[in-house]
Amino acid sequence: MSRYRSFRTLTVLVVVLLGLLVLPGCGSDDSPTEPQTGTVEIQLQAESFQPGDVLIAPGTTVRWVNAQAIQHTITPDGHDEWNRAVVSEAGQVFEHTFHDEGTFPYFCEPHQALGMAGQIRVEEP
Ligand SMILES: [Cu+2]
Image (cartoon, rainbow, N blue to C red; front, side, top):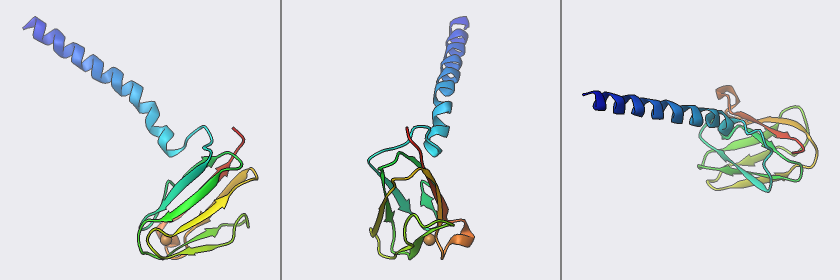
């Protein structure tokens, strides 16, 4: 009985320790701390950009990919880093390479009221 109990205690300890290791990693998926490089893909889902918050280094290309045959726009919000783009076919792509540092918010016109918006943050690593 006592062996069984200590095994259970050990199991609980292991689970708790694993949880502590995994938890800090969860947040980093949403807002990475190191700028991404190369080409970064954002999926245009039914009513959202996935991921919505992207951190990249200068020289990185962002590729927006329309996941379904739904019309969306990729409209700069208060800046002219790129020209407003419209995608309507499934798999349709819009790309832009960022050279200047800054924060570039954007939204989708048809789905703005549903919160379809995102931002590209460009920072030197
Ligand atoms: Cu949209």
